Image: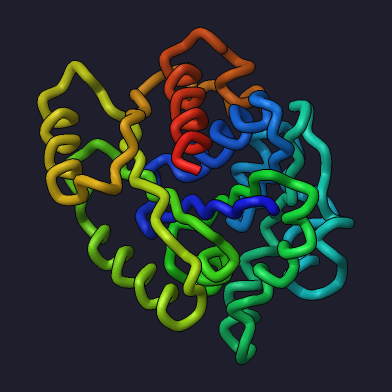
Length: 252
């Protein structure tokens, strides 16, 4: 039975998509069948794996009930990694899901049959706590929260954890926080070290040992439609995501 991870934080620009793409690729490289589900209408995770933004069928078709999730899964250039792509039309689902009672479990129900096929399912969430992210959190077993190593790192984290607790109590009792991941860490600056210390002090049991550095290779990789482990496997960014995958698997 596969495990579903949501990569979530209502703040934008903290490395959610980068983490979803590269973590999924590293897990697949380790030999675990992996599915990346792009539920952000920007479709950045889809493009980062070399697929066009207008890929069809898409997760929007699945959420509308027009097609089974299994029929919408597409292969990628990476062995063992598949994707359920997004497209800009997914933005309409934010309105449509909000209007329909009981729609919070639609993604969960769609993905449930795929648990037998994939050891890991990774959900790339949009930068909000709207209906799409709520669907992801209801579907997920665990949540990974990317936290940018910059001044406002702790802003909104308490609110996010409150939301996760509410969803756990009311909609998804199995939901747990797998960990917080420090991203865009610049070892040359005092600020990054101060933020890391503060996050670890506030959440001592929740922060991953792995820290993702600010690395130009990570930023370049999406323009080639490949993860950083294929763009430059010896870069600090690739090493960090391999380490994260190992840590995640070790945590179980």
